[in-house]
Image (cartoon, rainbow, N blue to C red; front, side, top):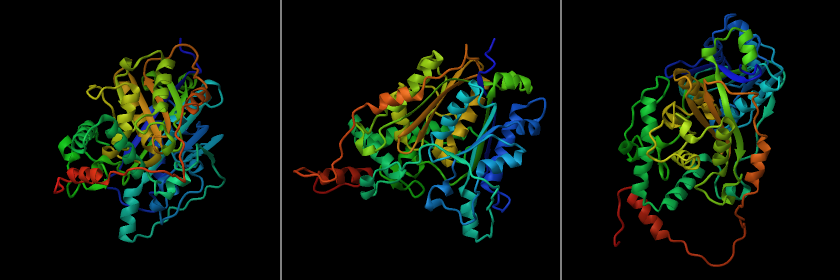
Length: 468
């Protein structure tokens, strides 16, 4: 017997569009409403997808890139209440309408939150969805098209998540604000800890991301399906130029894509009432959320993440499983450093044969902003459905290896009432860890080895200083 209040994921939908034409009808809202409709159809209830859509009582939408960054701001307008807009399209009247603050951790965080609400009877059917249209927006801008994506369904959504900037004032003073500056900093700390020279570390990063590229090659939803070799990924060329040392273009998340995804979460009791077949059910066996030291420059180590380690441990302990029991992983993969740190903290060796991504990762599958992990959860649902009884772990990361969530999924039912440990317990442990004190007015003497850094940079470009 399965406890009737046990939370389960019952439907998923994904769209990747590489050829669609921009239009006023094709807004972000319309796009993720399509993905939500696919998720409803994937649940295959006997009563039909439209009827199930009207039963949604909680909608959460992942914040769009254009609403976050001036760099990605759309000239074609925006929606004032994204969750209500999609609810209107589905004929739903949800009690909760949530619009997240920025963070790649948020899709898994939302699954964890809704699972808890469903287990306590607070929520019956939750929809998590999001989309990005940066490819077609960029094309429309270049073509000078007149498009109107303004939409005002009325009201305001409830904002959820941590809205703090991911950097301190002092970091900003030194131009440390963006992911493309922070993650290379972490990468060089990893290389330093391993005592590798630049060519050796470049080759290692190429070998790691070759694994993701191979997954993307076999995934029809991926945006880069060339199946890049390790050598190609680590070699600087006209189409693989430096973005920020030590990352060339193909080791960066690919944000200029059109992708949408959605997942549905409900209870065993409601799934039975609504005729959702058990072969669609996916159980959340373990989950956790935690935040590392918020300010990167205050972290004790730049090549570690106590929060990833804690989240993975907590999710596995909740399920009564070990890392050896997990058949597949989808590790957040915006840059190599995120994957390298996650593998170390979870306990995965470099030569572990298990998949570290089921999508192909953000550089090759696509990096639809805050919504990527909705895709990885949807794909993990497909993976464990095809291999009944297997377990898959998804990790999610926000800011600069800062905000973390984890989920452990399987088609195998959980045992007993579904309960999770209060996330505040893990967070208290993380907050108690030592951190560095940053002085904004340093004094004293020091040495900066500019020549060594110059030699390493030249070596990475195949150049040599003379005299040596």
